Every structure is written in structure tokens, then in C-alpha cells.
Image (cartoon, rainbow, N blue to C red; front, side, top):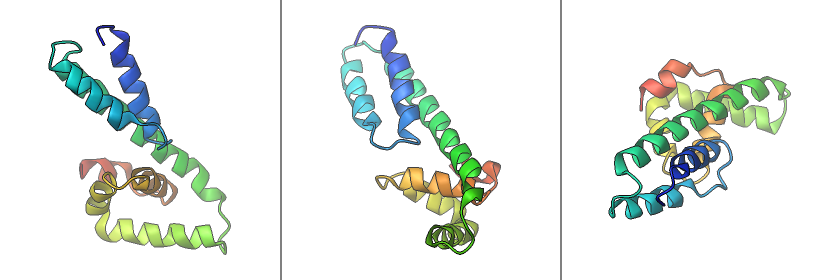
Length: 128
């Protein structure tokens, strides 16, 4: 844990977790935080790089949704689900974005939906 590469790894894992939720970034960040009690790694740096990675990962997920969202057929079940998600975001955007951060898999689903429905990016992240 004394290697400076730990910060890059934590940032990368937190970022990847934003759009590929099978990556166990939370466990890695908690483990690094526990080791930080001994002085290495630096706790403030662990928090900073984990937050930066999560922020970047959420934006990547949003952009993936924005790019792929227009490819759904208008009569498909996925398009109907996307439409419901868009209404939910329009009605309770900030609340739903915050709640979904704590539900496994929902963080990715809601950021993809926000991008696909073209939910305003500024509104999405201003609510955090």
C-alpha cells in the first residue's frame, strides 16, 4: 500500500465501476482507507482519487447512454422502459440520482438512462 501506484489504481477502479458495476471499487477504497490509518496511503489522497474516479465514471456512463440511447426502436420494451425512466428523472431527478447511488447496479442504470433520455447533465450533477 506504500506504492504511489495505489492512487492511480483506486482512481481507475472507481472510474470503471461507474459504467461496469462488477468492479469492486468500494471494497478497494474501504481497504485503502483502513490501511491509511497506519499513514500509508494518505487518507485525503485516497478520498480525492476515489471521488475523481467515481465522477469520471459517472460521466462516461452518461455519455454511453447518450450515444446509445437513440438506437432503440420506438416500439420496443427497452424504449418503453427508457421513457418511464425519463419521466421518473423529470419528476424526481435529484432524489432518484442520489438514491440510486446506494443500490447495486442502479447507479449505472440511472446514469445510462439520464444520458439516453438527454437529461441535462448540469441538472444531473448539480443535485449531488
